[in-house]
Image 1: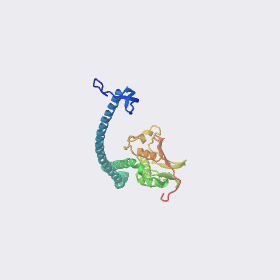
Image 2: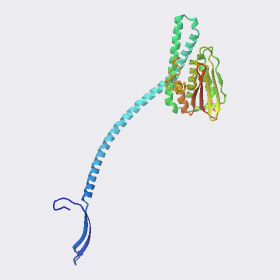
Image 3: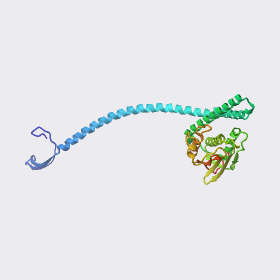
Length: 316
């Protein structure tokens, strides 16, 4: 209703017929009314605000839809770029693993053979052989580090197999026989022929190769190198103990450095600080473990724990 002053007022009323004429027409009625202007004006303001909010939400939704389209397009583009980079990395890893590893290993062996005969060479030739040997060793270490770091990224995708531990050890040891030198003792392998572990083949070979390479690299010049690998079963795990009589490591002081990324316990000879870090990561991902024992000047002992498998595979 409109007041005499021209203001609009909202009323909520309750009415009842009080009197009617003979013909039934309304003569008088009675009722009461409540002024709800404030409430009604609040409802109207709320409805207006809701309408304005819906308009803003619609506008922002449209803006977000445009941003999402742009973002999805950028994500698709970046995904393609990343996949391309991953493909290149996998191709590089394959080349490092297959095409480069064999010639580099042969170069390292040639350097060792030449080094053993350096007493027959002139001083300048012997020095050049030393350079070749050092370069080949560094190149081999870099390639091995590249392969291991790349393998960490793909570790979870590699299938596990039932692997004969002794056969795997013998296969890896055979690759290092020439590298050990003619004065080294034969590698002692005290592992039963029926010990089977559940592991990825490439990772197992990489871990064993890293331990063999470290033992040879840190051999004590004053005594013939001796490497021993011994395995036993403890519950649901196979424990492999790899010991050498090299320059040695402190089982307490060197533990973190030995397994840390780009960390080393020895200043010489040169190394990358990658191999044992990767070995530890590979074992942990497969439910295994690696720890260090030993003493400086006496030797190093690495204790590896592998998940055991009771079923013997035909292919070993």
